[in-house]
Length: 296
Image 1 (spheres, helix red, strand yellow):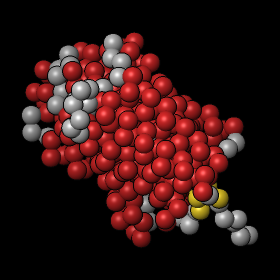
Image 2: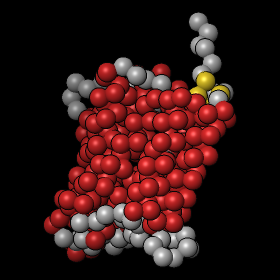
Image 3: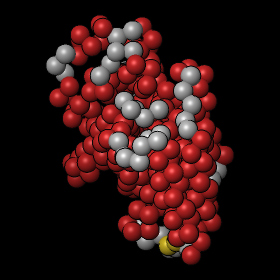
Image 4: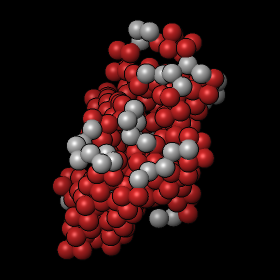
């Protein structure tokens, strides 16, 4: 991975990592999950609309043949992912949610093997199995003394799979569109399904605390807009697996920010599971994948 891709991916991971605590702060401050995802993506959509309409800015519209693919990816990577994370964090702490999402590169590698014809070595498959063990430990640790799996955990696991598919399948489009254009398309498409939460939105905003409203604005401008552009740019400059493996740092940021901001700390078992999952990510993405040579 080149230096620019690394720095962009690192910036994104730091911003996204802080986003887990910001989501919890908004939820604890009076927002419902539906109103939170709608508000933050109305803000993000507005940021991209202002950019696209700014005098002197070159901003292309998508080609007709790409509209369906862009829409589906927007629904998967924006709608499903953020719906899952936001509803999941109603019951799951910010740090634990970050550790679940850190397992996404394992799913990313598996999808790349199936659809992009990348190959896993024996060690890579071992890493995949280790990752599943890590996810299991995080799940059990997040439930305390209960051995049931809550809806919140299921929502976040769905989000992990969704964001993995999104990372893999958006890359071909980055050869056609600039990262900021593609991110804008995804954001606008992904915001549309959230319109079902319009009823009661104004009352929810008015009833939320100042901290919750500022957290929501931060989520809309930084994790939902700027960071997605940075991530798309990093993907356009580096290999999917290598860039996605940077997500191993996300739970560290999530835990630190949640501890300082919300005084939340994951269970020891969840932390152990997170470490196991991160080790599996390193094994799978840095050691286990055998990439086919690119024909020139």
